[in-house]
Amino acid sequence: MSGKIRDQDAAAAERITRIPLKYPAPVAWWICFAFSLLLLLSFVVSATVLLISGVGVWGNNIPVNWGLAIANYIWFLGVGHAGTLISAMLLLLGAHWRNSLNRFAEAMTLFAVICAGLYPILHLGRPWFFYWIAPYPNTMTISPQFKSPLSWDFFAVLTYLTVSILFWYIGIIPDLAAVRDRARRRWQQVIYGLAALGWRGSARHWARWNQAYRLTAAIAVPLVVSVHSEISLLFAAGPIPGWTSTVFPPYFVLGAAFSGFAVVAMIAVVLRHALGLGMLVTDRHLDLLGRFLLATGLMTAYGYVAEVFDSLYGGELQEVGTLMDRLAGAYAFSYWSAVILNFLPLQLLWFESVRRQPPMLFLIGLSVTIGMWFERYMLLTTSLYRDYLVSSWGQYHPSVWEWGLYAGMLGVFLTPFLLFVRFLPVISTFEVEEALRETGDLRHA
Image 1 (cartoon, rainbow, N blue to C red):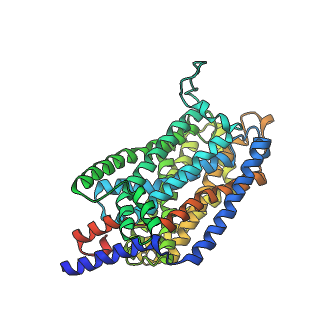
Image 2: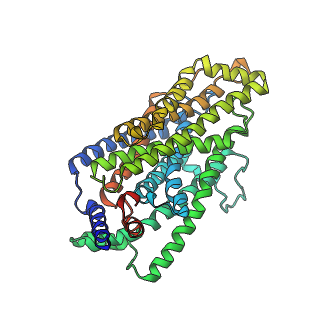
Image 3: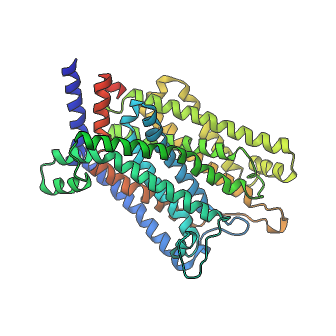
């Protein structure tokens, strides 16, 4: 049995570390990378127009001064939450099945948080003054307005981004050293060697690494709750109909995990097929992702029901009017799109045979990802476009530059993620090896 484990161990390590040195699907990667660069160009053009002309080029108006920028900010942050849950929380719980998913889930979190952080900065109108919302020493002795949601965003996103970078980089150091040791070209040895920070795999290195990795994981887990709870309070703390609900913090956290697991499932299916990782990202991993997706989806559905009950039970005229407007008003398409796309295909995940089919899991994840975007759009628009004063009512229509910036943000996400897939180990080699030694079976690694 020990010989078989060593063979599996070596095969797993060889398969993962060979990817950055000799990529198995270069043509497909270049096609995807070219498409991501095209999207990135859309970001450059849209951001340039914004900086020259101001936020007036967007469709924002009064009362809808939070448009796609804030909706996409919340959506991207939600996408990034599952990476922390899969990696940090399951690391602390000792769940070995995370080892085949955590590395690309962490990278997804990192790049999604970067995209999210760019939106409030661009939404300022004068983004070059974004540092004004930071408490820094200045000659005027002026401090940020800590009652402002912008200050909350600054601390929440910066903290989450910092911890995400540290957690991802600490975790990948041993694998960078493994790629360095297997590299044959001098420039690869130098680059991966510098990135590995002199890692030699000594007992002292492993002890210090394990302490740092677990400590960062322990910090990251509560951030999942605090960051999205802070975002929900941006809504719940204001006297806006449809937002003043105590259910928002858990509702937002669970919705974020729901959308995040959907994206992780999609990425797992694509990488499994594109890189030939069926021996590492097994049907069992897909089954577990499907279960998590179903569980968080049902919790999110409870939030929908609780929100409706809260409005009807409270009986406040404006709240009930907003609820009715969501169900049958001008933007009812966003509400029903969210309900249908989030919860109807999701019911197929009750069946194990569906959870273990990669195409079905991918399509369900895609449906949830789109549905959660509609939910964010619905929450913002339906609550803002009809204010307390009838004289301030107004329709909101995103402009072409808002859509261009959104497409560009997808490029900001995809471009570094594809570079990560191409040049870094997408699966944690040493953690898979460790799980193999303990379980003796790749299916549980």
